[in-house]
Length: 157
Image (cartoon, rainbow, N blue to C red; front, top):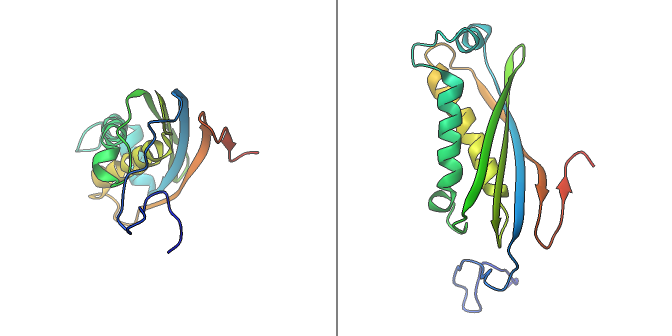
């Protein structure tokens, strides 16, 4: 059997033991987009969507998702998050979501930032589907990771 941090010597799944790792500041930034119709974008920009303020609700949903990552992703550790920021950039035919998650701990926050981005975009979809069912969520990616033993990862370098 191939060696894995998540499989013990008996072939059973386990959560990785991080108890001997150092506590460091961990930061992760993820991004993604949702393509949507001009009518849907205008409902967001003009704040006339019948379901409410789409971007505020999407931010709250993303923050909740980051906080609940270990309940959704089976082998993710519970992490004491220190900061979650979700920002949106409205373009001509899409919305870019950028999520930054910060924690001090023994494991990184990449999954938290990616999940928050995905759920933020899915919330936009949910709130706009009565206008446009052809929306596409795409380009979900880790943009930056800092902290921990493996150091910095930057997609732009």
